[in-house]
Length: 106
Image (cartoon, rainbow, N blue to C red; front, top):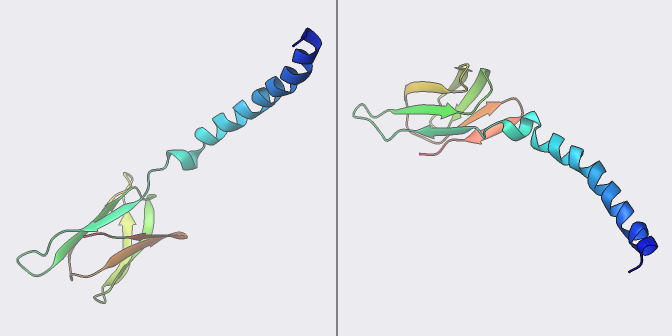
């Protein structure tokens, strides 16, 4: 391939790489890329017939817990992104914070 043809072919490719690299770097460093996924779980059934509900990876502030056993209410997510609710009826739980719904396992 002669020099002129190489310049015609490689110049646009080099330009695309230089334009795309900062965009890719910005996406990789965006706050949403660094936020861990929220998780929630229940303990096994305790001697008193209740379970403990806990979670992590949430945004500090209020969230709402929904339970299949009729339990529900607001919880305060700590600065570390975690919460604990002790002695709740066994059942399926989920936590809503903002527009996000997290299903609890366990």
